[in-house]
Length: 179
Image (tube, rainbow, N blue to C red; front, side):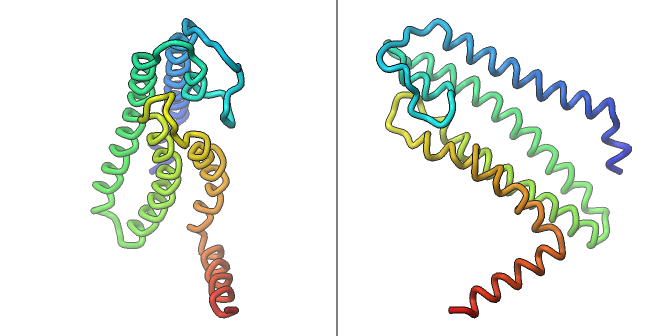
């Protein structure tokens, strides 16, 4: 049913929504940061230029700004999480009328997707829920959603492949028997 449901118009609408939400989220954060006074070293101790590490360079109290950043990012995360949750509820609801093989295939795809979503969202939520300026492990934890998650994506999705499962089983068996 995918080709009937996901037509070109719907695909373009989803792309436009993703770009639009991302654009307005970034503009809101930019407008928050533009009027802040910065002082001291203008070196961000982070892997990328992100709002939270940038707020550590501000010369005034950032309590209100930090709450605005958390609210902005929280709104985006909650909206995306709600859409994902609703899609999983719909999938599970529609699976009740399918064959056992069809359910197994759909659940296999969902499991892979949930693993990828968890690898991205959990570190992101942890980083953006805590106020800026504290002694958080933002730099270390951001590695999970910037490096480790994308690096594991191909492996996670390939584990659905039967030949890959067999090959991984052989590797695990050899490793466990070589001790």
